[in-house]
Image (tube, rainbow over all chains, first blue to last red; front, side, top):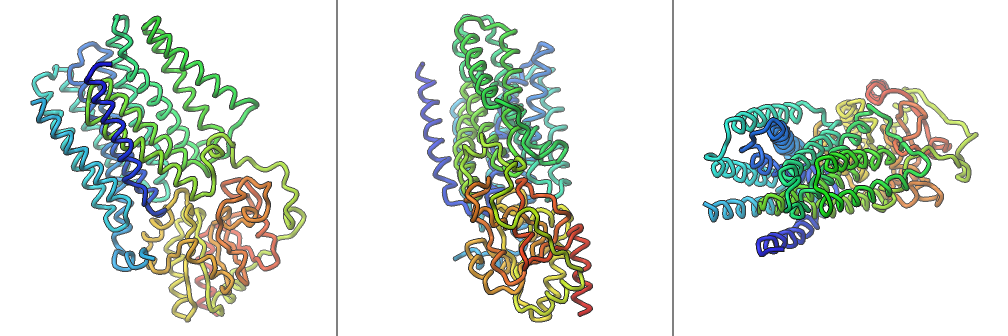
Length: 103
Length: 463
């Protein structure tokens, strides 16, 4: 383990705690949109896919890189759009909605 | 450049955290999604800027075509999917993300193959394994929810042993790969086994538990992404992937809590098998079912003082939410008090029913959550159950032997009359018989939910 790995590991541990903390008060009605939204966030794998695809040279690298970019883009674009569509439904009844939500 | 990159990734990470936080509150949820999307655009755009001088000609082509095709596929499928098919759409989006993480890990691993530094491939191996499980598992979840394959659990004797063996085999291969021999053949074996594990892991789980499984696979993809972040020394991948991994794990727990099930029983319990021992619960088996005409039920509804509607997935499948609102409006105009009782997992996912009814412009104040309304059923003249089954099954309260025992249910059985609109006597998604159907206060109206509701509207108008 070199210094760089330790630093990355630190980010990992801290991010794990934040991930737990940040959604701890989510109400049941938002479970589905939240799952869908966080599903879009792991579409960040597009960054990784671009990194491997950018300097692809051999046919194998080209195929793997293309597939990775393609799948990651579907994940990220579809994920955000579908989440927005779900949440759009909540918006139309906002005035009453907020009143009803607060117990 | 490196410092700028780290700062941009930090900014993106902050936006992801804020996005998740906003997504957990009804008021700000939509903004939260946008904030996270901005973070994503920032991270991806800056990555392209950094890479601009190192693109190979082939690299440019595959990146551009991949993004274009993927973008179109993503937007079109997300825009056109029916609201009822939302859960399986999320499963697919999650699956392809897992697949991408596995491919990134695989590419890095192949670069290392045969080199003496193969030990540094631990995160790559991890990304490949988890990514493949998530990919294959999500596809099975999609097939089950889309009803392209049976939603009932597919079990065979010793399926748990087989899964356990697969896990051990994968771990052993991973060790061989990293310590002894970093050959391509071993990599391919590992890949295949992880895909098989993804399939065999989800097959024995019933359709009713799929949301919990999708949430878990979502967390898995997050971890696979974080692992590929370690492989690429990339800060953004690690933080975003870990955020999803951690919040997804917690969300999985919250979801199974909302369904009154423990995660272990969801994952290893093969829930939803048609029960062999149906005996025990009084009323089940041998008793007759009272089925009524739309006219009778229409009159009953029209002359009630209060009606509580219990919508379920059958309503969603029949696209009957608009007809239901018409019926409710009609009743209200006659002075009947109408409320909707929403079970946390009505539909196929927590919160799914709220989305569907909102689409039909049902006033939000009429939607009551389970805890809010459960005591009101006693005073209600009619509990009108539309395409729901398991969420009103008294077995969850009364028969400790039942698979759904302990699941919180709506007390529809306490209303003075219970009207159940249902396609057939087929058991619900969980595959468990419902004694309420045989109760003397229950009237069944068989048929497609939308057609039945339309008939009821006509009957109420006539009376």
